[in-house]
Amino acid sequence: MLFAVLFEDDEACANEVRSRYMRDHLDFLERSASMVKAAGPLRQNEDAPAGGLWLVEAESRDAVDQLVRSDPFWPTGLRRSVRVLAWQQVFADGTRLLPVHA
Image (cartoon, rainbow, N blue to C red):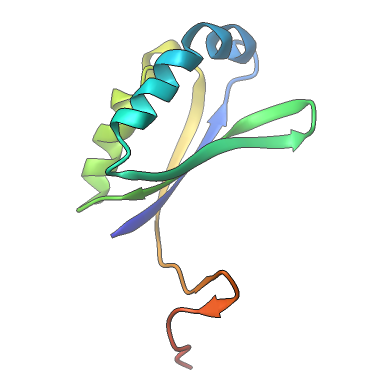
């Protein structure tokens, strides 16, 4: 099952936490590549980070929650909120993947 994980960051501590833990966070993503299919920052504009987005393949929402809580960013207070949403890809690279049902 695919999930979109949306993170909203607490800007009060974001710069300090990102600079201190980014290497550990990226190492974690590499170790979790079997589940984390894509990950990257979200921005309000060029100069204003807002959070992040992961696309995760997992058996359950609980497995995604456990993955999120294993991220080195988790205990730092960086994440103001996290939303885990089931996601179904229907379009990629100019191609419809699934038929549309009315």
